[in-house]
Image (cartoon, rainbow over all chains, first blue to last red; front, top):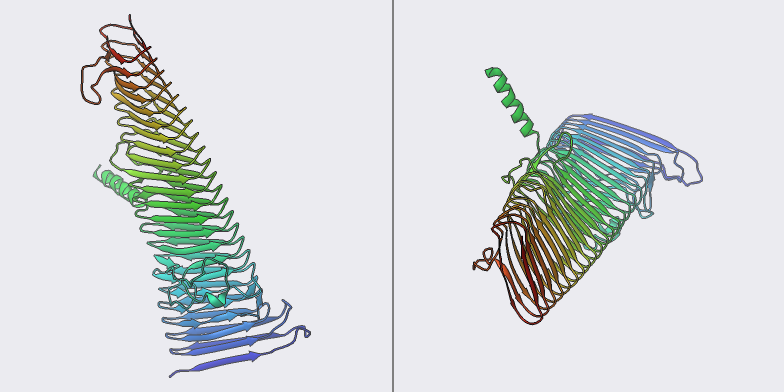
Length: 275
Length: 333
């Protein structure tokens, strides 16, 4: 029996109207469930909050395209079980930036995946915690207005995890703008930035519309930080920073690790420690 | 007692397992004022750093130095820099003093005013520095252990190559310089045996200095060009082979102790050769045919000056000169 849960809260207000606060909660127990959440509130203010929480317990569940537009949004997703999917969790999109948004994703079990988790705008935080043999694609934190002060945190436990494995339809982990930070922590043997496939022009600054291809770990802009910590026989491939004053750090422990970094620009620093 | 032994073995095994193995690191940077740093410990690790641009720094350390030192055996490190005013440094700590755990290090720099530095500890290290351009500086320092090699190739002007080998046996410095006003200094004063210094210089106004204090040391120089200066010192039983092709070159050889040998061929004009030997049974005699057995000073050219001083007993000296206006003096006291 497949169950659908649809929570649709749409408030589309002009910027002249000061505030709105939406809240949506979905909890399902069982298998083959789908949940859809849309929260739409567009305002220039950062004090307006859309909040959505979805919990799924079971296997083969899917959360489909949870979308939030506006400022100060909070999206919390928890999936407990195996073979669960989050398909395009998004805060903001082109022309509809997100400010001070927070996406928190927790997946506990094997074979779970995040197909796309995007944040467009500035000062957003994306936190992913996966425990099991999982993968995450984060095509995130970019917008046509540029982005800054965004942070991606990915913690993967349990071994055989990937950042950037699912398909060629999304960057492994991607940030565009200045002052962004990406922190990936993988335990038990993992891969980050699985392939070096990118569309042509990848070494020039470009916008998301033309980069929905690739599986690298990519930061375009200045004053960005990209840090990866891995233990086990792990691989970092195609870790790319283009811009100035960027820092790339790779820490790997145990045997049979491979790390590769590429930086284009001035005043950049790359450090790889393997011990 | 048996339990204690088992415990110790277990502890050693555990400690061995703690080191990482077969890791690979690769950094690639293009632009200016960039820094790349790779640190590795354990066995069979490889590291590469590639930089294109100016004023970049690349640093690779394999193993740790100082207190709590951690070894790195069978390692390979490679730095490539294209541009000017770049710094490349590789530090390697082998786990054994003998040459059984071989590690290799390569630095390639193409540009001006670049610096390359290799520093290793323990034996079995092979280092290679290649620099193309002017005002570059290559430095090699190998401490402790046997079977360490350093090779330096510099093509350009006013370059410097400094090698300091402080290990035990079988140290080798192989320096090649093409250009003018270059300088080589090789210090093998703290090696214990069979040190070798090979120099191949092509150009003018170059300066070569070598010091060897170990027994059975060998210095082998080939100088092509004019107004070059060579100064070598061997303080134990050693052999020197020195060939000059050019004019107005100056060669000074000092050999202390006994049973030293020199073979030298000079082709050109206005060269000055000075040999000082202190000890017994030293040979400067034309009595062999092999590279290291062709004792004697053989000069073809004009206005050359040869001075040989042998200050002890049972020494032999010979100089053969073919040309005009040459001066030969042999002093045996």
